[in-house]
Structures are given as structure tokens and as C-alpha cells.
Amino acid sequence: MTHVALTLGPLFFHWPAERLRNFYFRIADEAAFERVHIGEVVCGKRMPFSDPVWPEIIERLERGGKEVVLATLAAPATVRERKSIAALCEAGHMVEINDITALPARSGRPFVTGPFLNVYNEATARFLARHGVTTICPPVELSLETAGTIAAACPEVEFELFAFGRLPLALSGRCYHARLHGLHKDSCQFTCEQDLDGLAVDTLDDQSFLAINGVQTLSAEVHAALFTSQALIRHGVRRLRLSPHDCNMVEVARIYRALLDGALSPEDARFQLSCLDLPGRLVDGYAHGKAGALSVVQPA
Image (cartoon, rainbow, N blue to C red; front, side, top):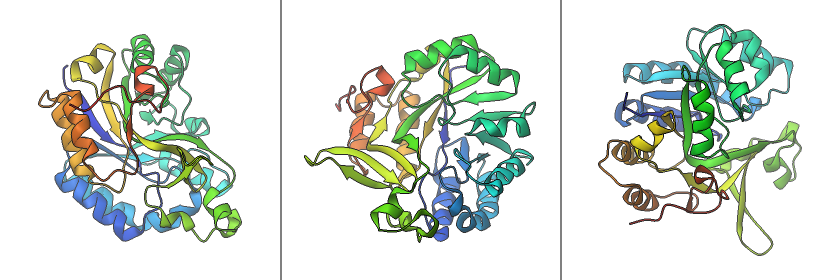
């Protein structure tokens, strides 16, 4: 097998229902993704806004030939949220597990894991394999080489590299957006909706530092792991995951598909990505085993 597939990961940000609908309809009709993950993974309070539009989006994506995966919350905090995860795990679709407490509800049936689950070694990967995992997306700070070492221990499991987007770094019990606007988490007024790609946070020296998205901390910069198909397959990686942002994701997918098909070099792909309206500069240090804020691949 020489084909490396493209996955669109779940949206981290709080977008209005109409924007969600328009975004995923375009993905269904125009984007080169084989698999699309949908659902709320960051904050359960947002779910009532997006839940009504998911059925329509699922139907459109499947009509467009995409495999749909239902993503679960990464840090469930209430009984209602845990029940919603259990309900998703009982659904007929493939499920992405982002919190280990979801495993009992899905164990024995196929599932995939997102980068929020701590898969840092071969023993963890083998444990998940025994419970039915078919695709593992390791934590974002792992290099391609490290992911390859884990993949070699579980040849029956597909490995997926987080390849594009602001990096999901941490989740908190507190809401940064609410605090910024002088509000409590319970009465946040969903101010995170104002920042479609999260809100960049600079240091006191005006240096780019992090980004906030409700209870989530992300990198301020945009991670772009640009490897050839041969390099990925050599390390046991069969999929690349691109994270949705408020940019031309159809074009992002086209660039990555061209890279994987050998029509673009990593340097040319980086240049084309840099021409898009991205929320931060491009970095790729983690993918190469270096500091995450570094840029290893340089534009042609």
C-alpha cells in the first residue's frame, strides 16, 4: 500500500450553525478528504448550538463520498456530557475517542483515537488495539520518528499524523474567554464565538505565544508537517490529519494531496500554504523532534 489518506479532524472552535453548514457542505463537494470527523470535542456547553445541524451535515458528507467519524469530548465534566459520549459510542458510525472514560462504552467495536488521548508508547497502543482501535492519532508533540516506533509495534493499527493547524496543547476547567471578558464560566455568553480560529495571546514583550479557545490552549502558530508519502509509509503512517480553520481548507487539502501524490515538494507545499490567510506563521518543529515553534522545512 502506497496511498496516504487525508483526514479532516474535528473543529475545535465555536462557529455559528450556518457557518458550520456552509463549511462542511463545501468540504463534502470539493475537498480531497477521505474521512471527516465532526462533533464537539472542546466544550460541552457548545453542543446545543451544533447538534441540530450535524444530521444534515453527515448526510451531505456521506453523499459526497466521505467517511464520517463522530468525535467525542476530550474532557467531559458533567453527567450529561458523559451520557452524550456513551450515546455516540452506541451509534452506528465510527467514533473518535478523546477521553479514556469513553472506552468501556465502545470496547470491542472499532474506534479511532484523537490527539487528546495519551498514546506515548507501544504498550498503550497495544492496549488500545486489544479493545478495538483501528486508527491512532498520537499526541501532537510526538515526532514522525517516534510515531513510527510506536506504529512498528502495532502493524494491525493505522497511524495518523496531526499535520496541519494550531496545535491542541491543553484543556482547563476554567474558560479563558469568559475570564477575558470579565465573565464566569457558567455565564460565559459564548464569547469564544467571536474568534473563529481562537484568540492569539502575546507575551509582555509582544512575542507570539499561545492561543485560547474557551477552555482550550493551542499554539499561536500553525503547525504544518510536510512529508512525502514515502517518508510517512516508511514510518508506518497511513493518514495525515488536517485541523479545520477559517481559511480555504479546500485549498489546504489540495496542497497536501499534491504533496502526497508527488506533484509538490515539501518546500513548494510550504510556500503555497504560506500564501493562504492563516492565523499564524508556519512551524513544524515537533514533527522533526525539535521545539514546536521552529520551522524546519523552508519554502522554496
